[in-house]
Image (cartoon, rainbow, N blue to C red; front, side, top):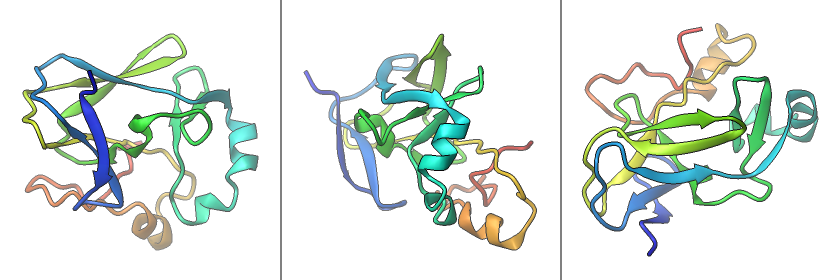
Length: 145
């Protein structure tokens, strides 16, 4: 039984939405795609970096999952400062789990915590501006790093 659907998001582009209620701690999706090193991913998406839009998910061992190649619905998860899901890394796999109860029809979000070079430029801050609209919004999809 499908638990999520991808459709237009009010936050940004497409988003992932619950088709049925989800429980706290429920594993909802796996972030799927081709696993590769950052050097290859950087070459593949050197022009996409100018738009701030890729489907790359960084792993703790320095590799990435490219959701744009062999990926699934999880690549459409949007960022929110007050996210209702989190990414759990297990080996070279990443699972998306609900951090609270989620109602049917509600959009699923993760906090991106992106790490990019030259992060202190106005251009980078604008490129990675947050659109979540939460009261606790930090204004950015970038991590603290």
